[in-house]
Image (cartoon, rainbow, N blue to C red; front, side, top):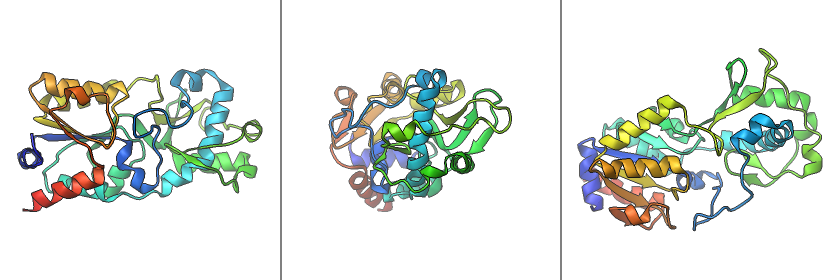
Length: 272
């Protein structure tokens, strides 16, 4: 399996891309893990912690209030733009992303599947009424005016470092519709991918002649499982990542380079 083989399969609409945090670094969004796939910072809040603990929700929304503007303002990288262009040229019908930043959609890839959800929307756990994250930001600001001018270190997925003494001053508003608990529309660590999304992505992985993993260490099982499904159904696995990944031993071909370098080379082949 060579880069030319991948380009050929794309022309036949038989390639599927799975993208990870590595493709958004150029947009200024940090990754959870180091180049070697280890945690770069403290372990994120889990699904059960958010649902069960008011203090954990206070911690999450305090940090997210300060961190959200970075993700909200982020713009697609050249890699996002190449993938969107190939989609519009019918070379890449579908794409699965582990990212929640919606940069694929901003670039014009309207069929990108957010396997871990989307950070630009929140949902009430009680009435399920959705709300855009910007509207929720205004609600948080209304009850926490002291947070507006804070400047802190940015972390992945709209998170930010805040000292405990500030976190403890934060008020978390209730759902404006029913008074329930509001949660970002993302799959937290330990949470479950919605059944419809899981079935859709697994079907695409089974059908792909090649699955190209772009910028992911594949430490999260949801992505690793898709690699196995492609291989089990006779497809090939191409991994593009500067550091090691969980599926290196399974890969048909391994490109130890950045997503930017890989897509640049692939673009030249597709233009020829």
